[in-house]
Length: 266
Image (cartoon, rainbow, N blue to C red; front, side, top):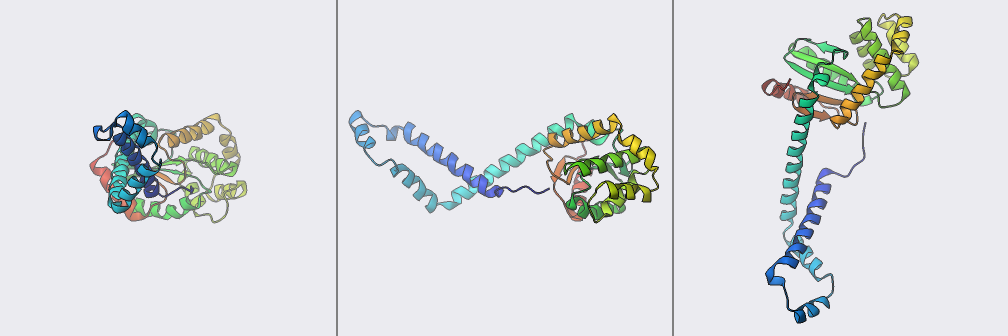
């Protein structure tokens, strides 16, 4: 799910320039070298107000590397703060994230590394990354996969998510999930029921289970958890202490899995 935003370096540079301007103004006002007598103050007050801004502008134009250095430091500070926040959230909500007994699990259920995926069956990026997930699972016998239904793309997505969770009651979640991810059309009621029939599900029982309050409660918990992790689009992944927002290639996923094996928090 894409969001339109200014590039991070642009925002960082803008923030840095504003901060530098504020600091420069404070320096100008507070530094003893710039304090004046009443007469001098009167003279200064008659000068054009943009003199100081011009001096700051000239300095920054003459030394652009200062802006870039400050922007890089700002980005690094933001990155470290985000990592700290991620670690706190993962620690406080680790049980429901990694070990919720109601959440479908694939791969090796006793694996030493857990990969959590938040997804929506109507998300084209989730479908694209499904093959990557399959490759990662096939290549790593120690990988445990937790599937978090995160239907954020409308009523059809909610219907599909409820069907998926209900399919777990019949022991057919994996089959149903793979069929849905391989689908090329919209995940609407017709395609969901077709996939359920192909997976060998009892459709009448499926519809009954889909109406259960516990199914809706599970979806609500997933949405609340995703927002706590600042995952506001699909797909989203949690691997060890890392939160990955957006699709990724196999090399990226595998590198995070390897890292998690050395710094597991579960």
